[in-house]
Length: 123
Image (cartoon, rainbow, N blue to C red):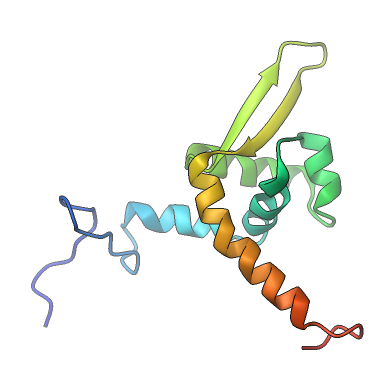
């Protein structure tokens, strides 16, 4: 039987309880594993992209959903955002060190799946 629930890290060596709904790390996990979050992290693995380039690289994502996904990933510290003061402003996104670290296993998963796929799309 559990005596207490650890919502935060609580000190050195303690881990977050991501299975608890109030755990702050759970929101980051939700953003990373969202429908579009994974694709953003994989698309940015080779360098920064402007918003329209990112949208074109992820077929099927709407501008609204891409913008929402990017806001969450920027807020979580996984993606950086740079605005150039031009008319209109040019916005570039890229992976932070944390984003690169989190994106590596996602890229590995994607690569493993695609290596196993047959030309007909089955594993």
